[in-house]
Length: 104
Image 1 (cartoon, rainbow, N blue to C red):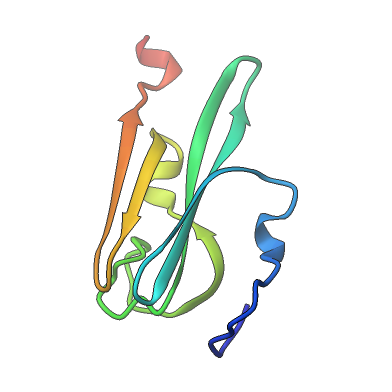
Image 2: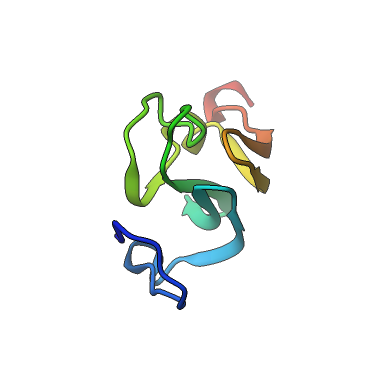
């Protein structure tokens, strides 16, 4: 990850090889949605965020700066994320909640 601002595109090695359906950028944060296979037929869209995290806007439950994309764990097992919008001190994600297989 980068510790400084840059004016040229950078490779995000953490996301290489992943199927990215959406990238978003806010004042001091970034996010991505990627598809992940969950068994034979199910697919779950995972949310990754990284950035300054001054107000907890990354959704990781802390205020620690993230220099590389990290999966938002609170949503990774129970929701499939479809849309993401980032602001200076907030993030909004639209997700479809999934029921565990044992309750279907």
